[in-house]
Image (cartoon, rainbow, N blue to C red; front, side):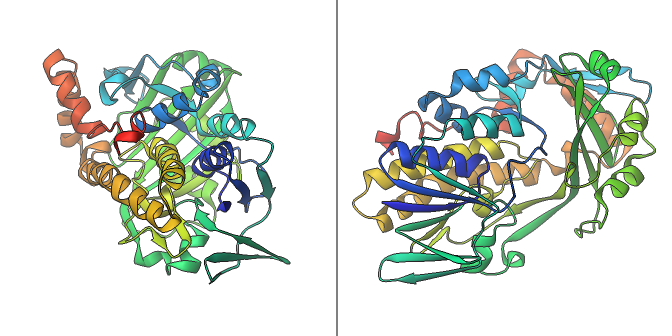
Length: 388
């Protein structure tokens, strides 16, 4: 089987690894000129964790992961108002890892047979008698299957299924992430995730090993349009926040070093069409509010590869992959929409209610309920694919 995968992010890299390991020929296309450095800290657990463990990659990922003891909500002077343990919101083992580090581990684990092309992406897709033709700038690839693993703004989805607006659900937030040098802030953050306890907008910080600090930002806005200048927008929106935020904003880099996007979900009636299938955020983005996007991308890639080897035909494999995986991701999407109100409160009153709820969440019997509510239903599809 020859497979062309568009998108050399977390999801595409996982699928390329699995398809090649299982005997397929893979061409992996990435529109960016090289590996991307932008990204934020991921709470990594669930089906993606199970998949990398099954692939033998867990030790390599653990080497680059971070140990986060608690998430602290801080006032404008850096004083802790409340705290939670990240494990309260996870089902099973949890790792904290920077997205670029996770991509690097997956990229370095690619089998030599995988042909990885940077600076290449599709401009047209056509099907002819059971094969799919992918037109690039100046070249054409033929394959048995084309996989769009190219993210929430997928080119493959647009070319094959229609314009993004048909499937895009904006959730009312913009988000940003960047890293900067600040050894003293790094030391102050330590092994915590430090977040401003603020309404309507919030910044958070993680200490990295090299003395740098990873930051992320989230704010409410009714306007989904992205700004022309992401750095200027971040400085303007978050400039009134206290603690170390002003210093972080002073070191906010320009594009492309800063990541900036809407918080949104992708909802599609079908994930495949002929010999084209979508994977990860391209067909089922769950959003920052739900979390587990990387985990679901990896888990879905693992499951798709398994079905392509298990079923008698590609058509049957694609149908079975969607049948099994859609309920899992729709559960997470529902959680993301429901949690929007409390993920970032709109008012001081809601902030106070959230603080009280988080304190209660530390009680043992409520702890388990919180984990089940926030993480959603667990799945054994990755650990027991034979039961699928």
